[in-house]
Image 1 (tube, helix red, strand yellow):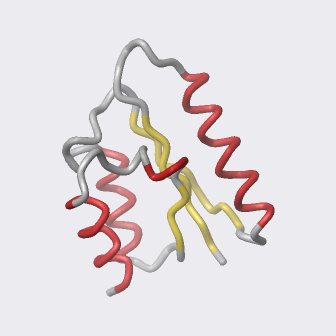
Image 2 (cartoon, one colour):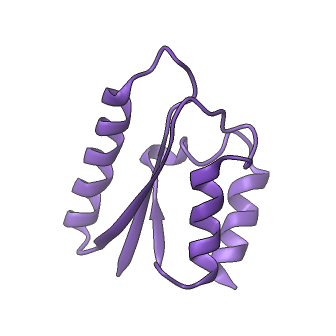
Length: 95
């Protein structure tokens, strides 16, 4: 199964260490579940209250091209601060 990682932090108070921790957590999960991580999408210092994030939009576009099967995000918190965005994205992935 091909997987991608979506990592994000929302404020200048967080650092690259936050991103590195998220990537490590997702890579370990992928390894335990026999997934191949094909790429990572990383948005830095951007809120999850909107889907207007460059790497998030690139991930959605790549999903439409069927470049991967699953998105890994630590505890789901990186993808969205609202319910609407993950639901819309999940629907797009399933299409």
